[in-house]
Amino acid sequence: MFIIDDLLLAPARGIFYVFREVHRQAQQQAANEAEAVRMELAELYMMLETEKIPAEEFEKRESQLLDHLEQAESRMAAAASASEER
Image (cartoon, rainbow, N blue to C red; front, side, top):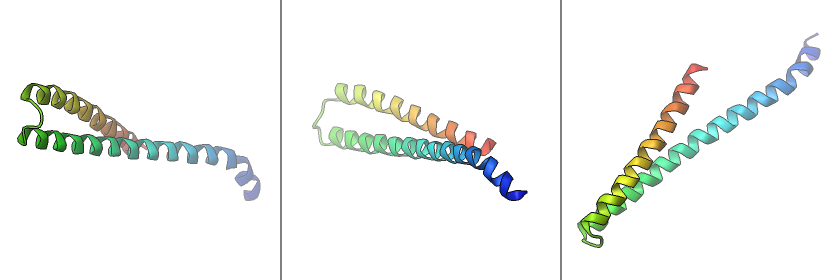
């Protein structure tokens, strides 16, 4: 009886496994994206300190990077809350 149940449920378990893996990969990608933006921000601050870029360009790029970081972190938070709901 249990063998038949296992055979019938195998496709559904496989689909759930794929969904879990896709979700895990999306979380990892969002974390990597946020870290890359943080590194780019650090580099930008260093460029400003060493006067390799003017303040106007710094402010423009900083604003863009901070917006990008905020979006990446909100995606991470959404993914984390979705994980907790399960």
